[in-house]
Image (cartoon, rainbow, N blue to C red):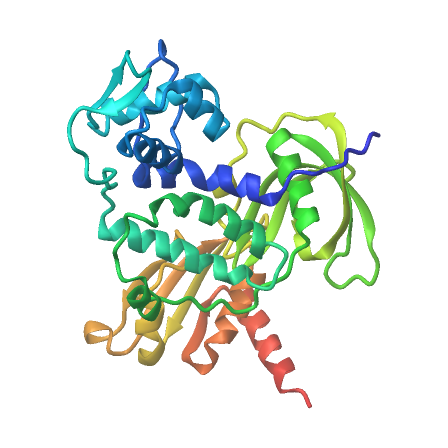
Length: 359
């Protein structure tokens, strides 16, 4: 089995995930043309082209290409974009062998960004704070700034006000090894079998696993790998903090066409997906009723008010395949929650509560 060394920075994969949707709303879009082969021009590069032309230097494609260290074809695409999409009056002077503005141009055209888009960008930056102090912090912020840097000169929105208005608080965040994450990311994206040492919950030792990785997901601030275990012949879930010594093989595999993470986790309350089928019935008193009703805890949940306008609380029903995570969630509500069904869940909650009281 061949091991492959990994050198890709996480910033590259993060940039690939973030760039498409974000730049569609925050950057000017070049026209699509199979004959001219447009690529997305750089805002910073176009601003430099604008400055050279505005100063009357009559730059041409060759000079601009040398100055910016790009190809002459790229310069020509940028010039075409500035003229055709940004409506800048760019003309070519055959006597001076360079470009000029045929009409006065005061400033480079600003990019219209709505207040909602600015807030969305700010919120995205805040979300990255959950990785502060972890190996992910620097590469994620680098990827984010590559998206946002081109907007700084045209944004006049009060960022300080936003900072005072929005915040996130994440409890129980875990540290993950950056190299480990890079290896798993590449394995998932390239459909390569991967091996690692893994320590199960309740175990004191690591054991080697070899899997076909299908999906990486961050659930409740912790990363999990969903993969087909080649030795156990089953789809298994692995928590990244319990892995070590991840290595890739050169063996390719084909992800099952019917695998969808939404289906796999559809009947789970969190990350555990069991093989059972339980119809959960819970009752919450008036104090907890409003808090519970304000959030969508599971796709199957149904809530029925008790008493007039829910004055006596609510009854919640859920369809789940496992009782482990719902047990912990019920206990978090203390005396404000009561299990109506099934009997097995009542017994679980009762035993867990009694154990908490043991001296």
